Length: 398
Image 1: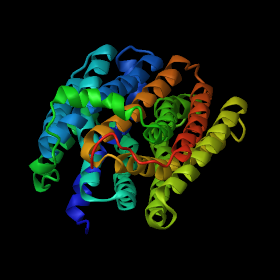
Image 2: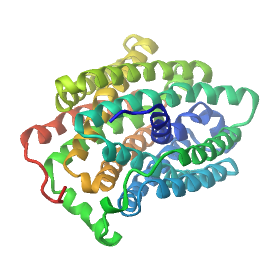
Image 3: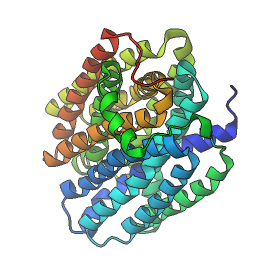
């Protein structure tokens, strides 16, 4: 099946909401800390709060998308996202901001989880992995430009303007959604009661191969969100970079991610998604260990830290798309629920990573560094579950 440009643009925009919602305001964190009278650790909890909403929301939207189709739930989620973003802009203290970030995430996650389900509706495994890599390359424009755009907004306006920008992005995406056809026709929808569909998560958790895929991406993203939460303070406060230069360094990491996604998209149909996934997890483990060594010793200074972090982030190109497509292939009748469960584990792990980075924050890169190292090793070890069993899931009919 051919993939038209309009579908690529809409799907990549939907999948980019997790990145858009966080990366745009990262350069503003130090300024927000002063304006709201909150510590850096407290402001980092705006990321943790977002991840809590994102994790729980996916578990809701997945079965809803399997039951009622994809477009309607995505539209409703975008409306919730707009409301949450406006609430963030109007917040007057850190805890209000954290609360509205949870609401923002509850809406944003509908776009992400159901966009992945749409890919599974349309394509088979390796083709889906290739398309997901292509989508992630396109959507990487958001984190590539996000911090730089956020820094530019800060030069001409207040930090609140960043969240009003997110309101406009949400409304524009809602309008663009009207160009996307429904991909889950009524005859293919799950007709069981939602309460039973929610209980079906326990059965999915009994599949070791699925857990292996979820662990590979979940552990990895624990390190990614430790990086997102800790890097503004490691670069801006500890290494005394300007918000604009921080945006440039963040962009370099995203360029590496885009490159690895492009390589994955080209090789996946020849080498196979599981082999490329294994390569990515080994690379993440090695990069994580290097980050820890640099964080503990200060070896090579800012350059050493930035290079090691960029290498870790780049491994996402071999991990995310292949883990997602591998998890979805055995459960086409529950694509929404499987995508939701995988995403919940992915971002739930991110909660732990960002929370650990903020809880142990001491003004140095070290807390962020050891979290990233443990995350990379955990991602690699999760592949033992994927490789140890080759049976296909039989919990649900195709």
